[in-house]
Length: 239
Image (cartoon, rainbow, N blue to C red; front, side):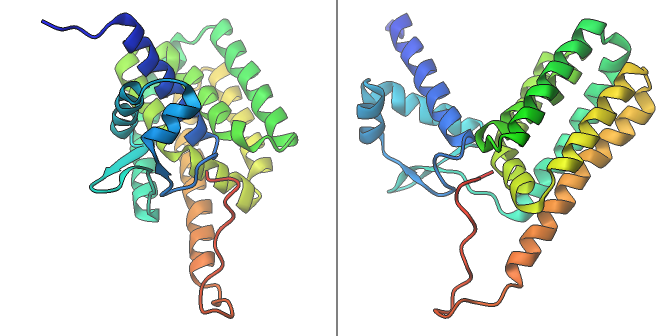
């Protein structure tokens, strides 16, 4: 029976992590075709680990395999983003409710350190880091729940909505509000107020939804350009 060699598994893991980070950093826009041959040259490995990496990223919702076209960066519609945010509300509120009674001072110190990094990234306009640090801060608050399977699902949901988190912060002027809400959430965790913290987290995620909906609707009502097309959204954030 033929088994995959450790080196091949390692290459697939390296390729998966590299491609995932480039998508999350907004290096590739929604709908961008990812050609195996080009990626193979860039990463200096055969197409086999690249192909397996793209399949893994498809299961994470970051890549879509399209017939006769291959892999493309997944693109979500507003209703799909809203649906994912609602799933986040359900899972994250439950995880936080379970975690707060178990959180230690060390857990909260780690979350506070991540929050400081997030705020530095906001101040420095380090757009690529915004979604990643936002997710790491939230996940650190839930880790004490001791629910690794749920935590893994929440992490995947953050990965799928990461590009839109960054778009929301960049294009809606949400950075000051994010700073205030994150600090308030951390303070409620310090007070061991599970009920208030969970209710606040729910509103925090729904505020992000409202900001995105407002921006999307504003884009849809903008007058067409002289060529009859709507102005394309900025590509830099690809949040």
